[in-house]
Image (cartoon, rainbow, N blue to C red; front, side):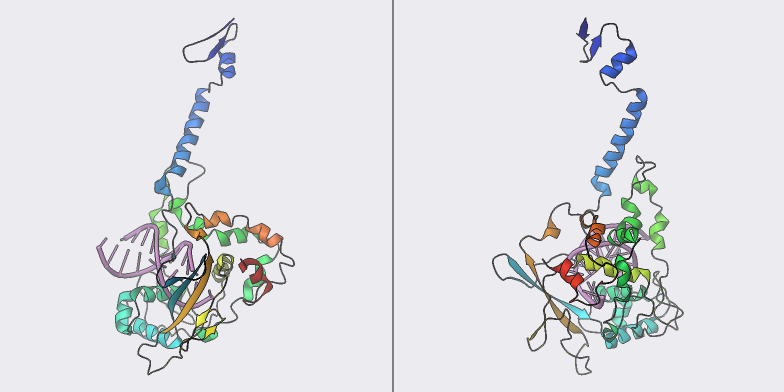
Length: 335
DNA sequence: CGAGTAATAT
DNA sequence: TATATTACTC
């Protein structure tokens, strides 16, 4: 004879306590503890506080945007090209400023280039600190190492390519060993500080602009030649290739002539030109809704299956891109 | 709150 | 890709 108690559990006559517990799926105290840990961990993961609030980087703006056809939006963006001249000026400013004043604001002032903004200088400074800037005329053959991309045994590296932030941003990491622990508690505050330590020097120079806004004088001018093709460059390159979904890139020169190249100088560096800033127009066409704008969009997850992309590609080790018109680009950029 | 910087979008 | 933009930290 069975009966149901006031907790809704079925008590089977004759069963001992343990058998009854099992039949009613009542967790043991140990199981309860484990469940609580899982729940707490889940709460941490679901907590908005520990999620990136917005994606970083450039967002699509309405500035300079115009409607073309039904579902096509034409976005025209201008940006400054750092010519050798401009860069030289930048470096001279850095050199002139000396210790402790090598910050974008000071550099901007010393450069005294109309139209140039602090953010642009900051961005350029960042590029130079990372040894990732080259003079425009030295740009062309930047994909020497791309051939390694599809070589065997590199799948783990490919994962890293697509998930760079997961390695370096402790704020969003959750320790699997101790899931209840708040990420903030896990966050070694000096870890972020370490990112501000001096980075790779400017090319050919013994000392460099450093990440702590100090630099040691005597720095040579960066000749813009990328001697050190390090692993980071390769990662960045592969990374941006995967995200390059532009259907078309069109530039317009000062005569209004369209050019199919990605980037073009509107005018040559010229003493008569007021500011030596060369601007390009970047026109991109997007179909319908901007997928990047959808909620909870996670580019990392979208590319989590990146390995399969390479597996499906023939001769992965031999035929990787050397230019924009390569087979590879068509495969990944055609929309 | 503004500056500097890493990360990331375009 | 090179540059612009954003998030984050101090």
